[in-house]
Image (cartoon, rainbow, N blue to C red; front, side, top):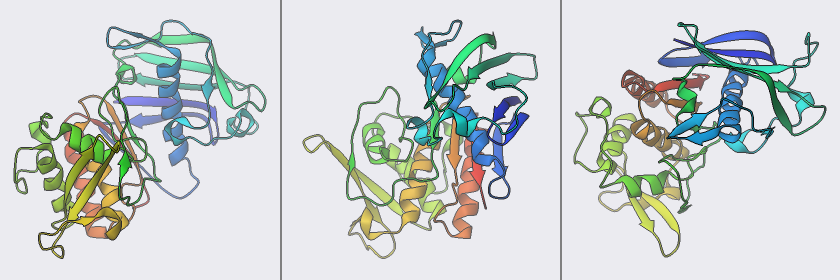
Length: 305
């Protein structure tokens, strides 16, 4: 088990948040669920922005004097530094860290300079966690506000397959991986599978969650775009465009794709996976995420369901 350590950030004076193979943040509004996730996102952003990329992972043995932005990346909109430091804190240092039960610990202190749009990492730096899962290149995050139905989605270059922070590259990823990606056997829904391509793996879970709904991916390099068509019991073999369906498909599809492509021991963080879903579909997507966690992905969920 891991622990996320948070000090003097928003509602947390000094907290240790346990992170298991499957972690569910649930509770009333305004009680710190999003803040805990934001802490982990800022810690990850510090590593990828301020560490040295070396031999396939991040090396954070020194500080490179870059600041960590509070807005933009990972859909963060935290304002300036005066908004994020805890009211009436005992000192003016914000700290984020991650540790395990074997006394391995990684901790970064930050100087919240007044009214700036960033936090500045500072010494002392505690780095006694060589197998820190945050050092992997792959890190998967889906914001609560995902992209709704679109006729097309833009395509982009990526260092590793991911659906974007709002699911905006889902159609591209399905198309790119359709004939090459091998899904972990532990993640396959064998009851619903109807082929060997990646889209078949996706559709097996989509059909299970949304009662027979399936998709067909398309990618057009000439228009620099990708899209999906949707089939269900009403389409009768004539696929329809995504904008002629509800939000449930466009909100759940990125979750399925992210779960299937996520590598073992990496973080997969999903805010509100239940959004726009019928209660039966909410239960089934919860089951899907349990399968993904059981396959070794570190799944973190924030939910009101």
